[in-house]
Image 1 (cartoon, helix red, strand yellow):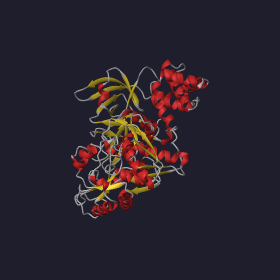
Image 2: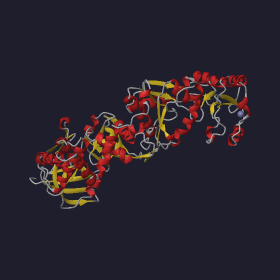
Image 3: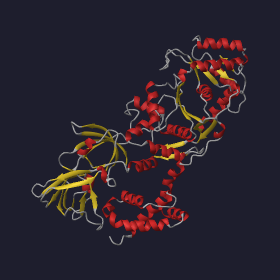
Image 4: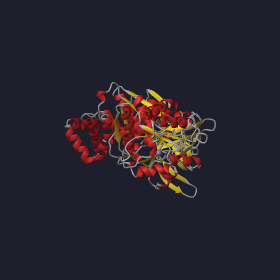
Length: 587
Ligand SMILES: [Zn+2]
């Protein structure tokens, strides 16, 4: 290897350029080396030989202008620029409008606890939290649970949502639950009626619809304050039935958007049939989302609201409340739709699927809930990074599975220790001509030798050692070709017996052959002393097989890499029966 070939030279050049591009034009030799080894693990054993070449190429690259580095990267490896853009943009969330005009920036995330959070919710959480942090402000978590009928809150979800938010790394400074605040909403409803900005409407829904469609005021709109208050008292004292009366906010009956016309602020819910999980049947009159949200955003001092564009109409509705009370409306930033391909996200679909037993639970690997992503081994940093890369733009953006995979892989790669997994049924490989015991000493992580080694040893019987290899490797082998068992030995295939699933071969020594052509390296396991592994795949199917016995010493929640298989998260360990369950993260 005195002269390196063109191929490896171009790999060095690629990573030198990329590293320079990411670090103001100056690449680091070590960083470049570690990138090369993670792409081409077999070059690890030639680190010493490669080093002078890497140093030379890094120097060359570092002497170029940043413009030239960027141009070369764009010409030859545009996909790398795209990948690293995410990191770049992360540092550059645009400033919030009028942040300097408020004493303290306050943002909020306001979920309905009728379902656990999914990837889509990560966006308002992360953006709201990051902005609060950016301005030394406060981030509020507010549970909007004022619809016990159609968006029924579920007690366990309040806690799950709190856990999800903590997991994402967002710390909330204040926590509110709207069902605790009913008296506040009632008081302000009464005030609006006293000021003449709201009224009790007793028109049947169908009748009001006609008024609305023809931009006419309904007769209730001209009720006196006294009449309104009297009817309101009846409403909150359980004297009306569901559908008998609502409170409407006076807007403009000829507003171009009919849904704005005298929108409903309170409605009666049959609370015996739909008791609230926190307040039972105490309240039968519940504020609508728009009323409670408007009141709380003001009373909690929210200065900047970050939410999806689907809320634009809500913003128009809520502004009426602010206008009538003489309050200042917060800055509302509406970001575009975030398309998430490859995930099941619909709350109703998920709930229905769980009920019917299609999904195991809210963290079924097929779902895009944060709980499911966590269980599969996704890192919150990866989600944060992908969300920040989408940012607050008002046009729609899409996030693909592959995109998230590649960010998560970059985070896991240096952390995940490596082990062997062989899916069932394994095939037997006989290597003839071995006279004594051979020990394989394989680092847990090739660039972090300090973490230690896995020791696997094989002892010959009648000059033959036998190991397990995976069926797909055996099926791709050819007679007379040489291969290497990772960390152990080289062998040449002499016979492949598909009927009895046995491959025979002869021993060719233990030293890795140095770059002489393509030597395929395969992983293996000894016949005895392995652990049984079940891997829950992203489609919820299970792949069973054998893995290193050392896996029994892993910790639940740890993510490892099964070499040539993918990243997996340890989900369960049973030491007595030597069985482990993993969740597959991604390749
Ligand atoms: Zn009416």
